[in-house]
Length: 502
Image (tube, rainbow, N blue to C red; front, side, top):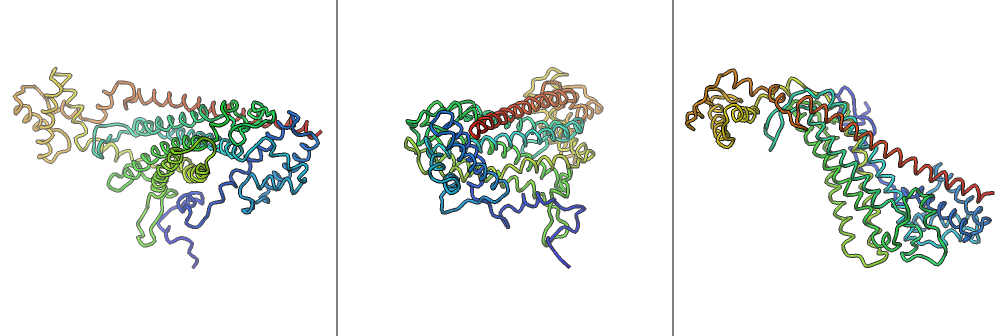
C-alpha cells in the first residue's frame, strides 16, 4: 500500500496541486534566486538602452547589430530554460554583460554599459518587476471581487445575523456581508493603481545617481519601456530605491488584512458551532491522527501570510530611515523582501476566489440564528421611539431591562412580559400587543425597514451590487489600457531593433 498523504480518507475530493503548494510553502520546495525573476526585465532594459544608444549615435549600428544578436540569443536560451545565472558573476546585470562579451567580443559587447550604472539598472529592473506585479495583483483582485459579486447576487436575500464583538448585533444578509468585503478589495485596486501615479517613471539614465556626459535620450527609453516619462531628478530613484518596493508592500499588506478578515470570518462561520457555511473539500485538509478533521487550512495559510506581510513591510520601511544621499547598499535587501512578499501573497487571491466560488451556504441555519441572541432588540427599541415619540436614551434603558427579564425567562428575544415589566419599572405606560413585539423583531421585518443607502435591504444591496460591478468594469478597462501601452512600447522597440539589424 502506497501512502502519499497521512490523511484524506473522509474527503470526497482532495485539494489540487496548486492548493497543496500554497499550504506546504517552503516545507519541501526552495525558492529561486531573486535575480532569476529579473532576467526578462534586465533583457528588456538592455534592449531599450541599446536602441537609444544607436539612435543617439553613441554606439554604431554595426556594434548595435552585434550586441542585439547576442541579446536575442540569450533571450532564446532563457525562454528555453537554458540560461542560468552564474553566482561568481554577482548579479543578473553582470551575468548578461558577461554573456554578451563572451558571445560577440569585448569590442562589441563591452559597449552595452555605456552611459549606465548597475545603480540605475537595478532601479529600472525593480520598477519593471513591481509594475508587472501591481498589474497582476489588480487582475487577481478583479477576479476575486467578481467571485464575491456573483455569490452576493445569489445570496442578497439570505438572512443571517450581523455581529459586533463576536456577538449577535442585528439581522443582515450574507450578500451584504460579501459586498462589504468586495468594497474593501476595490479600494485595494485603487492603491495598486496609485502605485503607477507615484512610480511609473523611468530611472534609466541616472547612471550612478548623477547622470552621465553621454547625450542620453531618457524620453525615448521611457517610451520603449512603457513608462509615463523619465524621473525628473536622477538622484531621487537611486537614493529612494526602497520606496517603490515599500509602496507596493503597503498595498499588499492592506490587501492581506482584508483577506485575513475574510478568512477568519469564514473559518468561524464554518465551525460546527456556527454551521452557516461549509468550505469545499478542496480547501480543507485532514489530520495525521484524527480521522474526522476537516481543517480550514487554505484560510489559515492566508492569515499566516498576512503576518508575514506585516513584518516585511516594517523591514522595507526601516531601510529608508537612515540613508545618505545617493546609493546605499542597505537598499539591496529591499529586493529580497519585496520579491518574497509577492511570491508568498499573490496566490492568496486565486485561492480566496476559489474558496468563495465553491462555498456552500446553509440558509436555514443562518435564518434561525438571525432570530437568536436578542438580534431584534435594537429594531424593537427604534420602533418604540418612532411609534411613541419616546427619547432614544430612555427607551434604550427600557430595552436593556426588557432583555434582562426576557433572558431570565430562558428566551432569546424580547418578550411582551419582559418588556412590560421594564416599562412599569421606568413608570412608562404604553399599549403594546404580543403580535407587535414579535413582528418587529422578525429578521425579515428588520431588513425591510433598513432603507438608507448602504444598508442590507434588498433594494440597497442591489444598488451596491450594481455600483461595484461598474467600478470593477472601470478597473478592468484601466488594466487593459496599461497592458496595451506596454505592448505598444515593445512594438516600438521592435521597430527600432529592425532598423539596427538592417
